[in-house]
Image 1: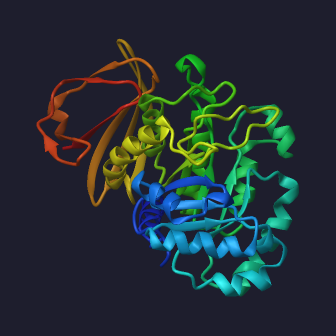
Image 2: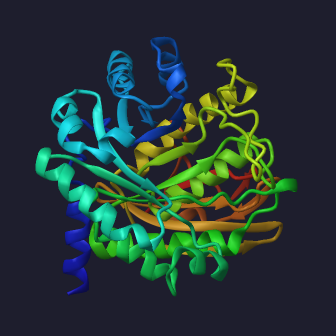
Image 3: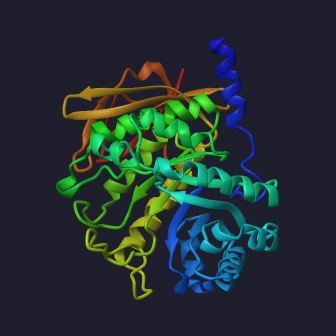
Length: 370
């Protein structure tokens, strides 16, 4: 029975994402303000290595403006609009055939009290657009205080409840890198375990958010910070990466957002170049993980640190990857080279396996198993 379930999950993971999907591993920019819905901004998003964008237009004309600008730049759109939420019967029929439309965003970090409302909205949209794909992003497992606020007894209960609302994937956010390069390791991996478990149970992939806009306890991102977030999520089996936030949000009383890739004045920041570099690297690496199946996860201590170890299968071939769990220190990984056919470089080219590798902060090492 376990082999049968494993085979079923493998087959499900290779199902197409929908006619309007990016057609490969989703790398998603979230979010772009309505006032910056123009061809230049969407071109910059594409040049930064994204293939999809989340937009939250404030008016009906801006819905069409965003979709048209995305189409002109080969981007797919996940869209939230109060207009769609309030009266889908009016808006959905007029946009459902747009080539750039990918998914309807129902909610970000909803609490349990919204479950019925979001379920009903998904049903209304689907009646109007039978092929519609909907999207909900979930809270992380940040402790009992947040579970109390969400209105559940356990994080598993929360994830399972919202996975009952029809969506093609599960999505969650957790931002593990704090000031000084400290990593909230325990809570992050507990969240990942629960998300991965539910993903396997229902036979649908999961997506993960990474953070690229500093605020509060979250520092200016470095390449190591972005690598750690991307590669640890890939190691757990993530089939899509979303960036919060491409455009720098307006500061609030609780969050002093600053220096996102796109500044509030519409200019690109130094973080834009960093994200562009990460995406160029991520695109190649993610292709190896795209529609793969993770078979096991472990956390292994090394002499000078700790690595996340993932065993996965892609197109019948077995791989092992190692991710440095530190955001600011190198780690030395010792291997039995005769256990591996080759090391797979980030450009997916193989080379002879060695017995020792130095892995920079947050970086990944991929080996093809014998």
